[in-house]
Length: 489
Picture (cartoon, rainbow, N blue to C red):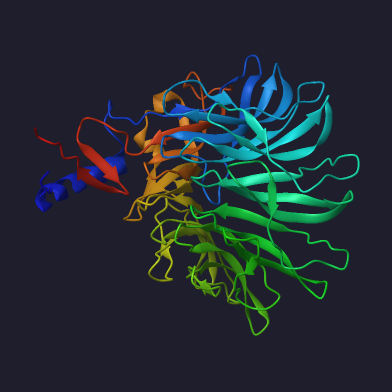
């Protein structure tokens, strides 16, 4: 297959730029696949949906997405239910749970899915209709819920969730947390790993306990292909609480390795880790004992030192705010940073930090008000370098219109996902929460079944692929357009 000539490529780049700015011509709209539905006339179905972010693991490369939504039956709440839907056009599926009360109510939430279709999250557990706490859950590709092990139960059960699985890698290893009990006595929340081959909960190490043996928090937020997990844990020194620290747990053991921070009296969390072992998150910064805000940070696999990532200015006292939510294979992280202009607050801005440096690249927005204020966040990035999130949208006069789901390609320009779809379909996409390496984007939108913007509109989960495979030969990847070459026989 011959390489595309640069002149021809440039021509397609111009075309792609026009499409992104103005939206596709009629007949070229990208298909939106909806999650579970809600009927306002009967008050039955699924409403108020959520997709777990930071990191965005809610969709896999095959175009299968997971989340959760509030279930109603003739106006009666049945609790949150874990759901799965995909790009095949078939109806969304409610995933299994661990029982309900006598009225049929329970809560179950799916947080992450791997490429094999294995999902993880949690479900409340009921025994003969009696609530006995929450449990971490794994769902196979058929939607059956398997209860994952815990670290004991409290006397007479516990009204709060006992365990939750937040992330799962390609091999099926899941991580999260479980409440620990010793002879029925609560000892705090402990980070946990569940291997794919079974259901036993392996307790991961912590950073000490108080005099009663309690460590309030130790949570694993993410896990990479090798099984290395990252998260945070409460730190104690001679039984005295010293805040929360970012932590790494290697796959070969359970010891908690404390990651570096940006000063004393520190708080820090690690949100995500890539397959190379690079972790990202946030840490409080101190300068001569003075608090200087929450800064985005990166921790390299080769050590524990915290590398402060750049910001978009500070207020008059030198305080800045920023957070890195996730990181791709190349080490590129995305999140947000508060923007200041001569110390004046201009709102949160979606930001990208390249793996080769620390400078914050402000990603594009969908306009500002008359004072230059706006709001945007990037929640996830794929290995191509395409990021997704949401942004406030303003008209040319600076009037606020609404929040819109967006993606940012390699050029950093914000693309309102609503410009890529047929608005007559009834969709207004408001938040993009996750993106796969194959361009599947999962999020939340306002959906009106009759497209008229009436009282029957409701929040609904959505899924779309950018670019959508087509025979036209134009492939948009990370904001760039490439000619899809064809083999000649």
